[in-house]
Length: 497
Length: 118
Image 1 (cartoon, rainbow over the protein chains, first blue to last red):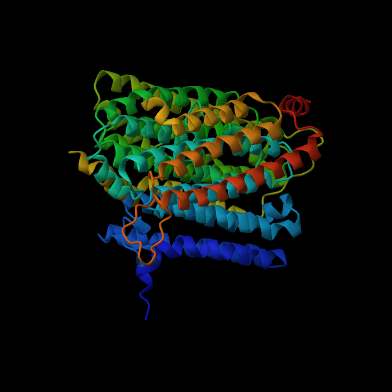
Image 2: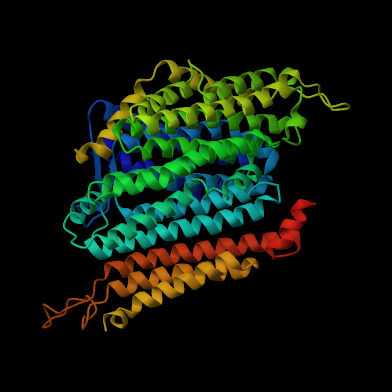
C-alpha cells in the first residue's frame, strides 16, 4: 500500500506535467479545458492540504527516487513554499474556471488543446520552483515555466504580443543564465547544489569573493525575472498584449515566484555566510524598491490602457515586496511575504475583471469602457472591491499587508518615517488610478452609437466574485497568510540570530 | 603565470560579453538570438571546464584500474540539461521571429516599432 500523503510534494508537480501531453490529445475543446481545470484543481487541493499540514506542525521532505540528499534531488515544502503554492495553484485554478469563454473568443478552436497544455506546463514549472530544494532543479523548473509562459503570452490574437514576447524571452533568458552563472560559481566553491547543504558549506569557504560575485549574479538575474525596477521593461507590454486570462494568471503569480527564489537564496543561503551581505542587499534594493513604488505608480496614473495600467501597478507592488525584504528584519520580511499573498488576491481579481470587460468591449482604453458600471454592474462592483484591496482600505486583504509594512518601517527610526511617507504616497497614487477607472465606468457616458453591452457570462461573474470576496475574507480573517508568513520568516531568518 | 593558467575563465568571460553585446546592440532579431546562444554557450563552457581534473580520465570503473583519477561528471550532466533548455529557447525564439516576419514583414527592431506606432 502506497502512502500517498508522503508523495504529495512530488505529485503536485507531476500531475500537471503529465496531464499536459494528455490534454493535447483531447478534442473537442471542452474536454481539454475540463482536463486542464481538473489537473489544476488537483494541484490546488494538494497545496491546501500541504498548507494545512504545515499549520499543524508537519514537515514535508521528499527524496526523488529515494536518493538521499545532498546527492539525490530533494523536494521540500516549508511555510514559505506552501504559501506560494497556494497562490500559484489557486490563481491557476480560479482563472481556468473563468477562462473558457474568454479563451474561446481569443484562440482558435484547433489550437486550444495546445494552449491548455502550455498552461499546465507553466503551472508545473512554477510549482516545481517552489517545491525544489536544489539550486539546479530550480533553474530547470524556472525555464519550463518561462518557456511555456512565452508560448501563453504569444498565444493571443494581438500581433503586438509577438515583439513583446520576444523581449520577454531575451530578458528572461538573460536572467536565467545569470542565475546559472551564480549557481556555477557556488558549485565551484562548495561542490554542492542542495540549498541546505550549500548554506552549511559556504561557511567553510575561505575566499568569499567568488561567493559574493555569485550572490550578485543570482540577485540580478532573479531581479530581472521578477521585474524589479528598472529591470521591468519586458513586463508592461507582455501583460498588455497577452490573452486576458493569461494576464490574470501570470500577474497573480509569475513574478512572485522569482521573488520567492530571490528571497530564499539571499536570506537562507547568503545572509548568514557573507559578511555585510545585509548592508549590500538593502543598499542595493531599497532605492530600487522606492523608485518602483513611485515611478511605476506615476506611469500607471497616466496610462490610458487598462491592462497596461495594472501592469505598471504590478511593478509598483514588486517594489513594496522588495522594500519589506530590504529592511532585512523579521517584521519587514513578514510584511513582504504576506503582501505577496494579498497582492496576488487583489491583482488576480482585477485582471479577471479586465478579462471580463474585454469579452464585451473591443478595446480596453479608459475612454472605451465609459459607462461600463451601468452596463456590467456585477463586474464593475467586483472591480471596486478588488481596487479597494489594491489601495489597502481597511476590511480588505490589501490593508493587512499595508499595516504590516507601515509598522515594519516605523521601527526603523528616521529613515522609516520617510519610507512610511513613500508607502502612503504610493497608495494614494493607487487611489488615483483606481478612481480613474471607477469614474469613467460609473459616471462616464457610453460612447455615441455604441452597441448595447450586456453583463459578462454568469460563470465568469461567479469566479470574479469568489476572487473579490476572498479579498474581503482575507482582510477580516488573517490567520492563514499571517501564520504562514511568520513561519516562513522564521525559516528564512531564524538561523541568523 | 596564474592569469594565463586560468585561461578558460577568460574564454568564458570574453564569449559571455560578446554574446551580451550582440543581444544589447544588434537590432536584427536573428542576430540577437545568435548573441543569446553565445551568451548561453559561454556558461556551458564555464561548467564543463570546471569539472576537468588534470590528468583525470572518464569516470568509469574498470577491472584492474581502480582508484583512477577522474574528472567530475556532474557538471557535464547538468550542462546537458542546460543545453537542452538553450536549444528550446533558441527554437522558440526563432519561431517567434518567423511569426513576427509574417505579421510585420520585417525582423529589424526599429522597423517593428515603426509599424506598432502607426
